[in-house]
Figure 1: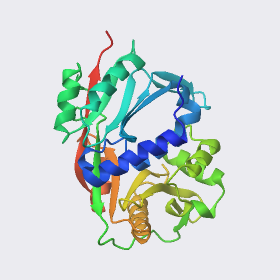
Figure 2: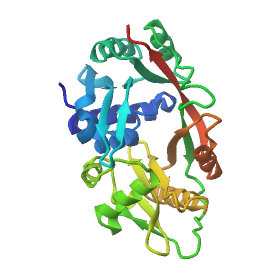
Figure 3: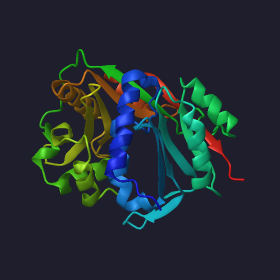
Length: 312
């Protein structure tokens, strides 16, 4: 079994930087700098044994990669289970080497043999759409439906960011101000049920480009951490990304999410970012997060087209 380690992850993030700089509409939603850091760091200890990966090089530089997540079932610690019955492929090719997707798919067939296979392509990636179709994939009508689980990527320029306004008694903090246990509790309260642990967060904190000062939180008057977000800043492209963003279930509909995002964008701008990204469910049946992001100035610039290929 191959192990996806920090060195390989950093190479994959480097390719994400190149694609973001040259053809941002081709960045797969799961393959941005921040998304790669977050998914790998929080899950490698629990799910790493279900992962397979391969890197393709051209002239000594990374030109493409594939990261297969095989079916799994693991306990969360509260008696529930986290599971997936279908293999999923995260992938990226350099804009100059789109044909390498065909090789990635051949490798994925072997890595996920015997399992139903899923992946996504971006709506504007015409070449990738043709390649996956030729390889036996079809649009996933369930995941891609108006009530499905497909994701859209949203962007916002950081030229003007309004001042955030919190309800009386609430205040902004950062993860640099508190023990790891408190930041983990904030995440778990916002994303219940969650298997996020202190050990996973410690790995997140060691993963590039995490910065504690770009991990803002909102504290309620009683000290409860009521909202949390992590901002991943790529200084090379001056792009920052929210992943994740969440509000404690007892403090929703009070404007905390709006205030936290505005505060976060001001932090990102002060750190050098000129553009902000955030992903969310894009289907019309799931408007909550999308409307929240639209309300602070985000607009959609690409979306996932989920694809599926049944096991033979």
